[in-house]
Image (cartoon, rainbow, N blue to C red; front, side, top):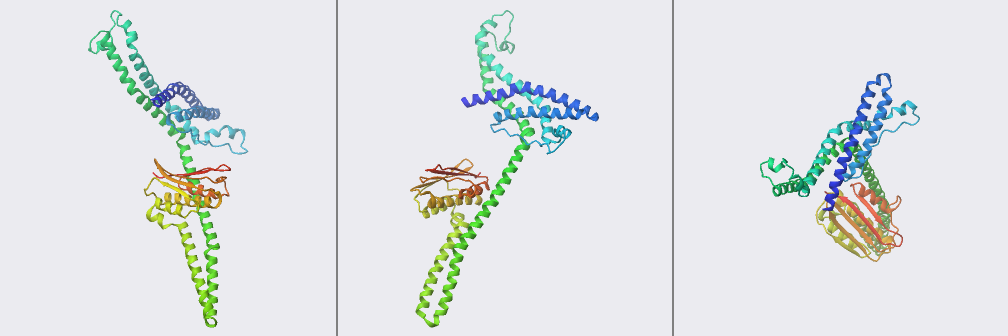
Length: 415
């Protein structure tokens, strides 16, 4: 109830305060635009138009601030075209004329007036009628006794008298009070929709483009880091083992004729090295595309990670759904890398892993009681995890003060 009342009051403030502001802006912008356009042939109108666009920008900034209250989202201010470096006085003067958003601000200031009038009138009506009708029993004692006075129920043929009038007006007030919040909200949203389309639509699109570009860059960075790590692991592990294996086999070949027993021992060692190499290759392949993840999903894959971790892991997976491969891969590798860091650096005695779906967000939470000090700064291991999550529009949050404990939360959209 409190949130509904707050919503109604915010919408009411938007429609009531916005009407006189819109009216003033409409007059200034229309007059300035007409005067500037009419005198532009003699160049006097150019600074007039530029000044009018700056006025429109001021009113647009005020409207954007109100939009955040109505639409429930942070205000988004577009990027106006900056003045070029080294530009002269005239170029600086006419710079507003070169920005497309400035003209959208002006268009909004002119088109917004009828929407503001309608919203203002509806708000006044749906506040005035309930207040007047619900309080009629208080002042109706006086108005009912005025000679020749005819109340609305009598005009509608419902009868006359204080009791009839009181019941009618209270019922009318209750009806308007019940539908008033929806009407006021609708009027505010219609007007705010025009503002969002003209004042923040381009900026929101630009922000989305920037987010996609950042996600693409993060994906490229994460992929490059993963490939470098894989190359390093192959070079330091299986490649060295294979070189050693080739040398062992060559020695066994030389020993075959001279010392069969020594050759047999060398072959036994080579077979053992082969098995170790296969195990290491399997471990590396799990880091590329773990079969258990693609075949059975996140829950079994995370259980396998928890089982291999040298630190005891308390695993809580509250979702068994299958998600897009990119989402599952991101969650899996974040968990795998984080558990590796816990085992290597945290000196923790216990680790907790929780996977839960909250709405359209898949949330992975990993905590430990170690020494802390983890962060996502560039050059540290967690920076690559943050890039991997950004590649799927996700986010990584790290809380790890010195001395611990550490809490890492990865959120990925999955709707």
